[in-house]
Image (tube, rainbow, N blue to C red):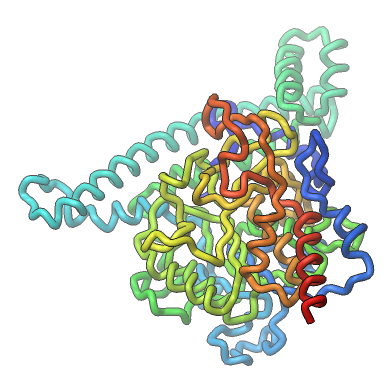
Length: 534
């Protein structure tokens, strides 16, 4: 489940970033900016070379298939006829033109909200252990009883926390909306920007009206927002996120799985879902897809990192925690339908069917598919803290075809590492830009978003460039090149969620940030060496 990245106390932390955006991460690396040198790579190293299209699967919450910057780059199943209600290619999925949706029903309905995994575990264990005394249980039951007590405490804590926060932000949102509407009417304007409010503050004589004008103006200036509409948009988003937490994610009585109509405990079942890869809220997946491969030829909006990508949408991540069964099936679907790279911008703290996901990862490994996974947004060291899908198999060995990615920011300063990013010298492979990343969102729009969810598709985009321009590279080659070519940084930074200052190089295996220019140079060298050897 994606962590809320807007301040709960003031809830407007990222308004300035959302107001306007630039694709800073595409720029060249300089002393002050930790870009990944995308445009320089195309200009100096790839000019005149012809890429081979590569299929990248985006396992996420949905993709807006109508977005003008994504329509041309969507994967199209060549053996499926759209809308005829038949499984033309006999792959088990009807009308899967652009991918598949594992959290939808055959009747066309879709799961939007879902519970957190901890909530599902609590609901599962409650009938068995509610009211029981640990001392009365057999030794083999006490471990499960301890898990019940742990999940119960976590669910109840989060219920209280998010209900309180939701109530508070709802009141603030109502007050803010009312004040803005009143001021627009009083000033006879359709939009309240800083210039309009400044003029009003200087000229108004009505003290009762001047006071809210000054209050709203102060708020806009503090947040770097150009007008009240930007603040309103962010407040709406945050209010919706808190509503999800308060009413659904930590509600043990909520069950949206009946929409899907499968047997959630049957981990071998694969014939469920529908072909709607957008779903009710494709914000997150649309943003991710744009980072990887937004159309670079149409002179609109943004440019993706890869210029020869086909985005396959696989919907398996709801507003809540994804289920292990769905993730396992999503990986298998992507592999079976030709994906060479899979982006996985999701994660959670519990994984009760971990083996099912691991079996699917081993299947992808056997087929030579590279998987890129977001490290998570809890500011934790995942060498010790749980984060699933895990970067290691259950037996403790590293998963060879997975790259785990932390999030970096633009300035090469103490703030180089994103304050929310997970890290780990053993379990995070590399960092990539993940703060204030400008990309596609539904409705033909563009926004800045932050998270390791944004850093992962940056690496997936780099991997796609390597695979498309150097098609003979294996998953192992691409992973090795990405890690060996990462730009090392020894900048002193704030360790996430801490005031402690550490060397950036201590936060991941490579101690660096992915760089496309250096990666392509390595691939060119490998290509030249291969030709020379012949």
